[in-house]
Length: 217
Image 1: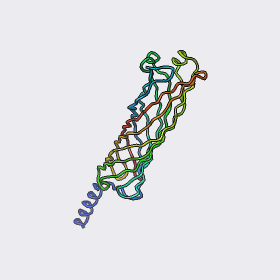
Image 2: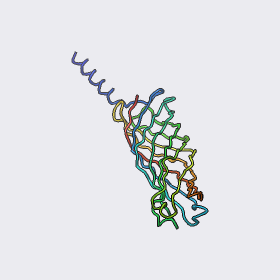
Image 3: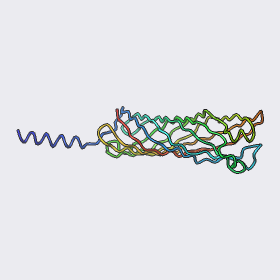
Image 4: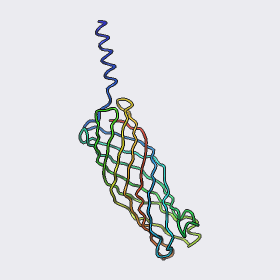
């Protein structure tokens, strides 16, 4: 009896040490804190402000994502977040400081390959598509004071996304996640000041880096 109890205790400890396995049909839900850092490249604001351009500021926001395993190694991930961004004037517009602000909603779907689905540490890489919707665009007080009431509109964007990350198991259900993405986001901002139209092309192309916690279902 004593030997049986000892064997059972050893078996239980071994099973407890076995890492959670990612398998076909599993659903992973992650909540991350992310930094959205545009690597923006913008044209001049034309035709009215040659030599003047814009810079899009970083944002720190929460992100929610869902990964469904199609096989033990391949998962499809839907990434959901929305971020506020201040738009600063540069060049001849630098004296205005902030010229506008906007919200960005960039739902992104990636197809991932998980390299070590049976391990405690599980790296992955992915590629996918992004569709970014801009909303709540507003001209700043400084811009309105300089040129008059201005309506700001940013075109929505469609582009590719690249991703790499890793999951670290805490136990059978919970894990920690670190993730980085590069997302292609290109837009044209149109400024309408009493019928006078100016436009600026902006390649935001942000790097999105985050860390968070996840649960397996």
